[in-house]
Length: 112
Image 1 (tube, rainbow, N blue to C red):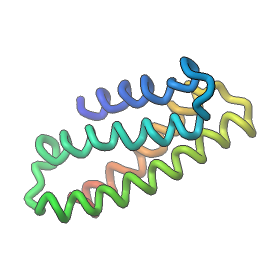
Image 2 (cartoon, rainbow, N blue to C red):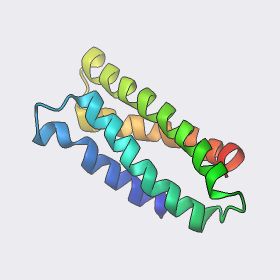
Image 3 (cartoon, rainbow, N blue to C red):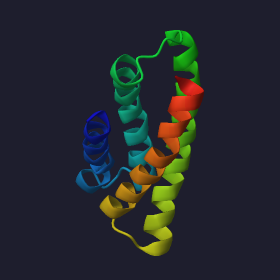
Image 4 (spheres, one colour):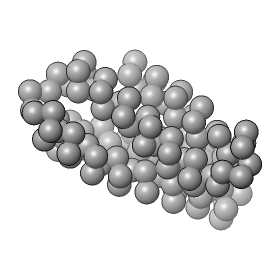
């Protein structure tokens, strides 16, 4: 449920470049990853994993994971759009899926 809400929020924010054409697609995707990650961490920490780790320890590790995901996700979205000509929505869906596949195990075993 949290993942689904995060995904919808990601799609809304990452589509900002369609509404505001002056915002580069990679920047919109990176910002979407950062903002949805804040929501995701709060919900996952409190409800999904019910982490017993300190908030500072988990938070620090999560910030590192989010920064990696934001940079990697922004580059991936730009690459898919500029090199392969994909629509930004499709590129961001692929990007969100790839980040989810990587992030869940990272959160489970390294962050929480």
